[in-house]
Picture 1: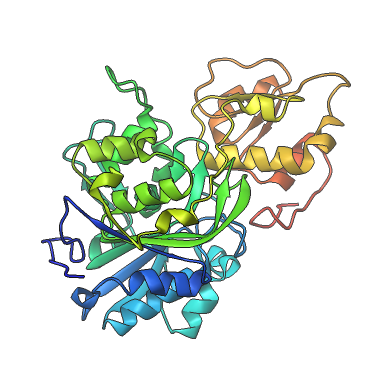
Picture 2: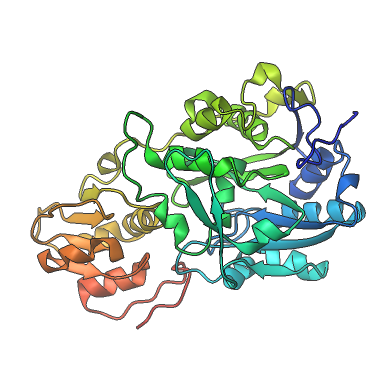
Length: 408
């Protein structure tokens, strides 16, 4: 298929009718290669290509939390064959080592096999980047590699998200924000005269300056329900590729049983002209792509309904702290109840937006520090399960799924 290079977007072609390719039913590597084969990657020849997967947490392949290593492998191979110099980079959530995450996800292994560099994008000073059309944010602290490489490729996992509906190729670029500045987007005040959440507005703002040149959405095993890390794995065995990340996300949404117009950050970005989410304006191949769709369960609207034995007090938390809490309650909820009075519904607070909390509240994370006198306070950004359990029980604990060692 003919592809005309757009200035600044080497693979885009007709930006008003973007193309999307779907590879499915062949396994992670072959699905990605099938979809990538429909693209002329020759504009990458002799250029530096940064592959940005979702590798921000400690999780193994197939958990639906991080990008499948074989999709990353396919991207490395395809761009190398096109004559590009490739590297894989990530800036993980707070408290996670980038290189530990690459090892756990399996991405380090496929990169070593190909002698492909791995980059900790938090290692060097940030680049302050203005957001000229920003509504919720006016500047960003961006990892330098996102500015220095000639081509940036977003390779997210196909996931539901408790705060933003979905997390796909547009939101994955939030992982190019330096260190803790990712958390700042969760702490923004409401925008006057706008009903949308400030986080959704901020992601739309971000997509105006951190728009990838190519999106490769990994739906090998996605995540439904309480994404981005506390949901359930959802095998789909599909990969979606487009030079318009909004179009890639719109088709991914359709495969997940969703309408992209119902995802605020996608709607807001598309309304600004950053990309296309109207399926009628997107050229999708193969023609029978919809047969691969498999509806994903949405996140619950009320977390208290998920965990009725606890009072979850959440105001202006980020997904890192919320995921920590959800994983804690899923794994150790019954055990945790043993340390509170019988019949009580323990209050657990996360987020910086609380003005007051009831006595006896379990305060999780640095953002609740000002309320530490009301009950049990556990520092961290976020703390891990073993630290929380130790604070409540007074006993040394460890948990292999913490993502980092317990400080016992």
